[in-house]
Image (cartoon, rainbow, N blue to C red; front, side):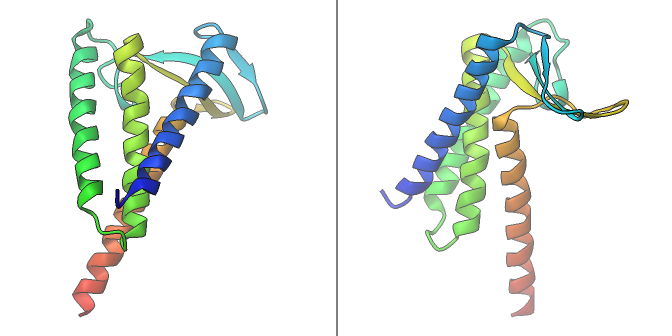
Length: 159
């Protein structure tokens, strides 16, 4: 398999995501927090929606919708990875990050009906939405993918 190391990275990140969520699930009750520093807490939150709790207040249909969308997106990203040349290292890294995050949150949605979020950054009265390892992977992957595409577009425009 040409991209075996990238799929291994995806698997490793999914395992890290699931283990961290399992630790939170096992040690903190829902809505319970553990202050780590003055700006970081681990807070056990159930997100029934998508990013930033989008659709969280619906009556349950969103779980099936988000499982379907996540499944289709994960398959599309895996195919995109397979079609990406091995020389496109940053694109493969970006897609690996996005895929691992999508699958990590998909596992939660399919198994639990919600996503476990727990990383809680705050400063005085400012609170960033609570997130998890999968969310970090998706965010980093999207930023890297955008930067990679911008660099490639700039290079092709100069030729």
